[in-house]
Image (cartoon, rainbow, N blue to C red):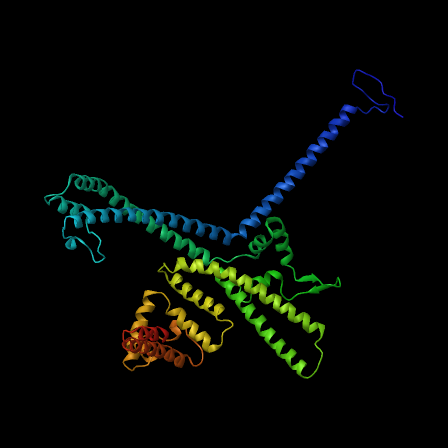
Length: 427
């Protein structure tokens, strides 16, 4: 037991230790401890941020592409609004011209639009009999037309610049690899994703019996696939290859099950478990691919506006990959038909080729020969596989025959109710 007494030096205990000094020592210790802890936390956070920055290049590139796309869409929307205002002005002027039977054909372009609104207003105003109300409207349009034209010119330049920036940023995003770290953050969130990323680098896992098992591929290795391409398109191809492998394994397994059933053998639980595992893998892969299709399609929509070698090559590669996914459950002939339909569905270039091929087939030439005469091959159109020539020729021969049958059906209409009904019911 200590005896406490007073002295001029402060409150002391029996062994001469100053309690105030003890308190100061504790404060000093805590200050040092907290300082070191804070420094450690600060250093750890700085290290984490450095890791985060080094492994999130794809995220930054994607965000830049999204921002550039949003800015282009905003600029394009403004441009369309100005064009709409110009069209409204032209329509108003045209209505006044029509009202007074003033011929405007010489002042119209090939699309029927007025070449110069001010010139048109001057032409109308020079005619006698124009009402004061119509003159007032023409004066109002004339006073705003110059300003609108200037705005249009500037906005067209801004929109084109935003378009090129969007294409450039999308090219960067399309050519940037996504890291396993980013994938884990996307799936599990920042903190848990960071832990999953660390765990995913290892080649050792604990099996259901608690034993350490060495894996030839880490989870990170599996993510990158055999070709190591983890761009959006690269991941799409990797997941597609996995899906094809799962489907092939399932088909082989189902064949074995069918043989076992026919021979009266019992299906083991291991086989049943394996089949369930494969069906789950197919479901998960298909879901992943559906999301990637949306991302790749968005990039393809932008890059189809580009003219660089990268953009042209990438779009062709992406289209083939998406077609491959869409055709995965089709027979070889069905795949070829799907490829033909996909190519000749939409674009101006494909429609021109289609019309030329139809004319050639109508004159007795085969569609494939006519295509080769244009300097184009079936492979160029993405149509591959055995028997592709016959399928392509039959496709266009069928279109020509259907068109001829339609003409004959129209000719056979006799004007009666029964005749019209028969024509509608025919192919």
